[in-house]
Length: 221
Image (cartoon, rainbow, N blue to C red; front, side, top):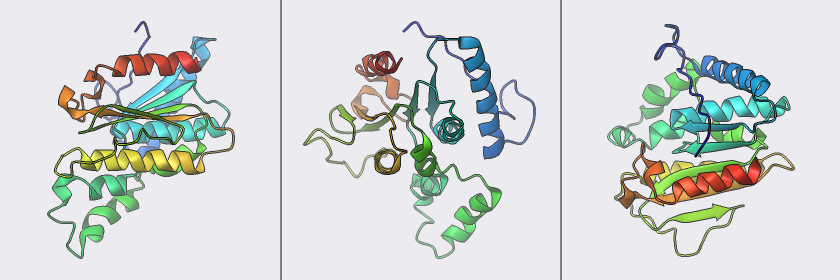
């Protein structure tokens, strides 16, 4: 697609320094890289792309950057979650323990106490640049813009392992639509058909995905 891609290794991973990662540290790292690229890119448009946990980092970092008047041209969130509490709660591995009375005490409270909450559903309300949120589902491809959905495309297959992921993405989308700052640019919500092999790691396999990303970047460049 003729784009330059800059990817960073989180602190404590890859070739980065061996430092214990934290939400605050990851957000600081992303902001440093973004500000460096912003200075070097000149008039070239900058888009930020986060996947999975990276969506939480991207939302937090861009929330701060946009409030500082340093928004990119756009944000892409691939397979996002709305906050770490719900990510743990809706994880299939948690279902065995969720009904236990001490679930929050054992699994949720330690996360809160650590300060690593990744509250994307709050952070997105401060992001004013255009956003594209992508997730997968069992029913046909659906492209939704500015809070509208195409009728007949929202029936869920509850047995599907992607149900929790779709629910978290929808919750984040609704949060972005409901309470973003005045004058914020549109949010586009994309659901792709799981039969294309679009698991948590493979959403870009969907045939329409490349053209959707191209349209998004060209529209807001």
